[in-house]
Length: 499
Length: 111
Image 1 (cartoon, rainbow over the protein chains, first blue to last red):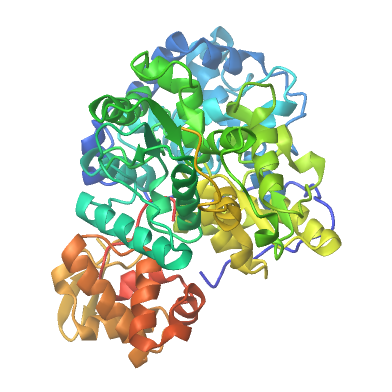
Image 2: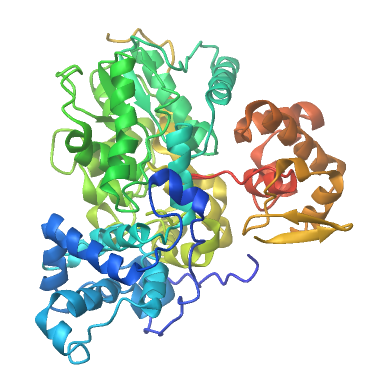
C-alpha cells in the first residue's frame, strides 16, 4: 500500500476542481462462487445479464416507489455536488451524488421512458452494457451510503437507496462484491461477521472477565447463551476482537454489573451488524435480523440492547419491527430495541451509576456522529436524542469535551470514509481520501482545542480511523469508544444497582 | 487463482496473498511471505506467529488482540505485552499482517 497518496490536510474543507476519472481504477474484489451461493445469488454472471438486469430494475421500480421518484425527480440543481466526502477527497465527478445517481438514471431512461427508448442520445440514455456495468461496479462501491447528500437535496433524494438498488441489481445478475458477501456467509454459518465460533467466543469472554477482575477487583461478568437473562446484548463482533472496540465491550459489562441487571450475549446472535442493508437485499437483511429476534425468544430475555455499531442501529431502530416484528414478547416498559448509550445514560440519570470524571482527565474529547445513527435513526424519546445522548454520556464521564465544526457534526456529519461495506483494504486509496473532510475538522480541534480523543459509537468508524489516522500522522491511540470512557470512569461497588 | 512459486512448489493464495490452504504453511513459506511484506523476521516476530498458529489450531479463528498482547507479554516481558509493540513488529497490523505470515485467513468484518 506504499503507493497510496495521502491528501494534504488544509485548515478548511475545500471543494476540489472536478477531474474526470481519478477513481475509475478502483474497484473492490469481485465475489467468487463460494461467496455468492450461500446468499442464493447466481454464482457467476448470468448469460442474459443485460436483459435480467433491466428486468430487475423494472421490478424494483414497482416495488419501491421511492426509487421510482428518485429516478424521475432530480432537477440537477447541484446542491449535492460538494457534499460527498468521496468527491471532496477525490475530485472524481462520478463521486458527486448527482452524477453517481445518473449512472443508474441514464439506464432507467433508456428502458423505462418513451424519450429514452426512442431517442437515447438526445436524452443521454445509455444501454446496460459492459462499460456501464463496469462503472456501476466501480462507483456504486465508492458510495458509503452515508446519506449526507440527502440532507442538502431539496427533494430529499436518497443516494444511499440508489446505490443499494444498483448493488441489488448487480447481485441478481451474479456480479457481487467479495467483502460483503463473504461476511454475510459467515453470519449465516457461524453467527458473526468475523466468523468467531462459539468455543472461541466463550474463551474470549472468559479472558476478558479475568482481565477485568485483575484490573478492578470486581467480578464483572460477560455471560454467553444464558437463558433467562433480563437483557440480550447484541454488540458488533469487532467488540470481541479488535482494539479499541474491546474497551467498549468491557464498558457495557461494567454498566450491567453495577446496575445489577442480568444480561447475556448469544453466540448465534453475536453480531449486531447487518450487511444485508449495504447490498440492498431485503431478504438478506431480514434473514440476518431474524437471528436476533429468534435468539431473544429462545433465551427468554425481556429486553434487547444494541452495542456501538452505526448501521446496525439503523437496521435495529428503523427496520427490525417491519422485518421480524412484532416484539410483543419483550417487556413493554422499555423501547425495542435500546441503544447501549441510551441504556447507560438512563441508568446514570436514575442514579444507578456513579462516574469519576477525573478518570478521563487525560483526554480532551470530541465526538464523531456516525452517519447511520445521525441521519437514519433516533435514540431515546426526544427529537435529536441520537446527537444529545452520546454527548451527554461523554460529558457525564469526562470533564473536557469540545465539538468539531458544526458543518461536520449532527445531521451534517461526514462519513469516516469506510462505511457502507467499503471497509476493505483493496479500497484503501478511497478510504484514505474519503476521510479527508473528517480529518480536516478533527485536526482543527486538535490544533486549536487540544483534542486528543476521538469518541465513536460505530465499529466501522473505529476500525477505519484506527487505520487511517496514522496515515495522516495522527496517533491511532486517540480513537476510542464512548463506552471506553464509561469503562474508565464507572465506580464499581460504589453503591448497589437499582433493580 | 493467484499463486507463488517457492522451491519448486506452487502455493495458491487469495487476491491479497493470504494462503488458501492452511496446510501449505511451513517456515520457508512464512519467511517468503514476510519478505513480501518487507518484514525482517526476528525471534520476537516468530513468537507472534507461533502463538497465532497454536491459537488458530484450537479455535479456528485468530485471537482477539488483547489475548495476543497478553501472551506476548508473558513470553517476551511485560513491556512488550501491548498493542504498540505488536504494531512495531507488524506495522500492517498484528491481525492482518501477522495472520498472513502465519498462513491464516484474513480476519473479516469491521476490523
